[in-house]
Amino acid sequence: MEGEIVLISCVYRQASEIKTDLPPSKGIATTATDMDSTESGLHESNVTESVTSSSSTLIPTVPPPTPYERRNTFRIGPLEINLFWAKVFFAFVVTAGQTGLDYSLPLWNNSTAEAGSKHSFRSVSSYFVLSFKSLSLVVIFGLGILFIRICSPRDLGAVERSYPHVLLFLVGLCDALHGVLKTVLLTESKPDDPPVHLQSILGNLTILLTISARRLFLRKRPTLKKLLCAVVVTFTPFFYFINTQNKSSGWTVPLIVAIDCLPAAMAIVLEERGVKMQDELLGRGINLLYFLFWISTYQFLCVASAFVWVDIQPASGNKNTTQGTSNIEDFGRNWWHELHLLFGAVEPAMIGALYIFLYLCIYVGSATLLRYSEGATWLAIVQSLVTPLRCLIQLIFTWNQKNFIVATVVLLVMFFACLIYNKGAPEISLKEERRRREES
Image (cartoon, rainbow, N blue to C red; front, side, top):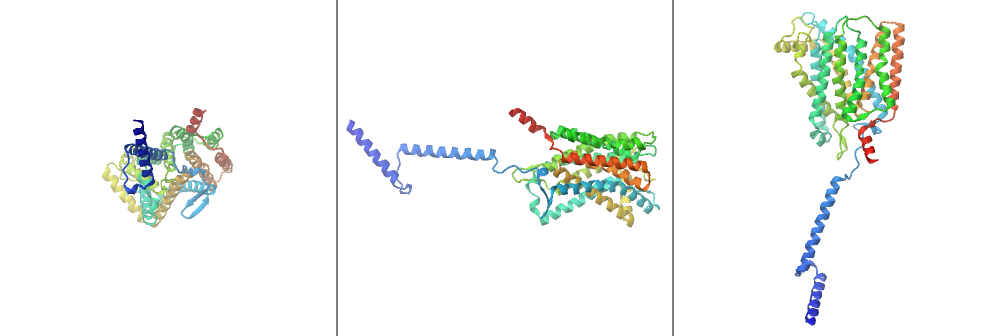
């Protein structure tokens, strides 16, 4: 019996040696034990591959993209510019554009009043300005996207297709609300209302509302030093108002200005979130031209559909016409007549084109600053410089030495507060702060 067992084991060992020596293509039959070992090896190999593939999806093989505000250069096509000087340039574009916009609108009104003196329209209406500039941006950005689609289609791809349009709609909606409230502001203004610079000072409350909105929605807050600079920029213009205050009895306009601060702050906070989002795999964010096209489109749709009542309601409608606007037909007829009036004379067309160009500069400059600077708070601080700058320009033509000195001091204080804010330490991310506390 023992001899038989030894013989069987020797035969089994010889068969195993023959199987391993010959290549698998010879068709040598394997034993049941070998087949089991082969199947188990294949099973182990499949498990290893699945674990490796799943771990590669959990752990990215490429580093996360660098935030826009931490980059060193700003690129426009093949041209690269130092990011600091790019931010200075776009801050100047926003400030100068907003100042020029405030002065070009009265000129536009006066030019259309002279051109349409033979008609029932005395000047261009506030709602026409709001709707026409929104429509103009849709056309301009649409042509820009068409140009990119033809000449550089790689700049419009998966990031744009997968971008959430809900965020684009919310930005457009807030911009439309902001524009409608400004339209009501222009039509409700009376001679006995508080002066224009007081209205602008109240508009500086957008800074504090922006800080609160960023803390709530973006989970970011400025350092104590930056917060003090923001407070200084917000309340310094009050010294100019105290020095030049006039008696007034109307407070409807300041109330509208205060309410207008909320959609203005929400618009730039949501826009900041949108332009700073980046795809981790592609390493880039949404194309700015594509982004601006859609928010201007949603803004125009909101203005054209939901806010037509601004021009129809007797309390807030078009007060620049003698016919009035009481229904949709009158509104459409008045809008078409004002469009014909705009392009029917050289001077209104030129000033209107200048107005649209300045508005375009503000739109593009603001989006670029939001992407490459710290964010919405910095943009609100830059826009606040328009108030003392406009007052300073007015005092040059209507000379008053005392008021000129006060306005100059106010502008310098706000300017240096802006520089200190920009040079300060980076803002604090509440998400990272909470994560560090949990880890410790």
